[in-house]
Image 1: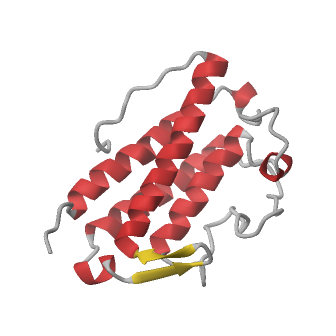
Image 2: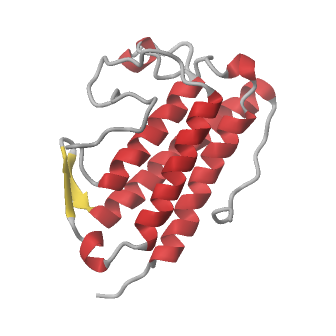
Length: 175
């Protein structure tokens, strides 16, 4: 089998996605922090607050953190964050601040960099099982990278539409 991606390459691209999410969280004006991205969508996630700018950032970080472990069992996010996101209809007890989310982002960024840098072939092929399916740990990290990038892009688009704020494209992870 030929390896087409190495740990450093994976980190550079994953780190760039995390950096772009970080930039969106930093660039959000205070008056948009709790504003919903999808005001007119009547689905359950909107009713639960999922579409608030800060909550979408939390959601991306929560799942990044969890997927770095490879399993739901035993996962707990660091304080002050809550284990909310696992079941439909759950809601967080309060709005998290920008500083709290940026702290969580830095925690996840360092954990991601460390996890990827030491990932062996054996670890990469470890099977991870979730209620929605199973995949190797390495593929789970690619899935997670896409998830972080998706929500970072949604937040950036919202900032462009609501505040006229554009973003630089992240070519690789910042040092």
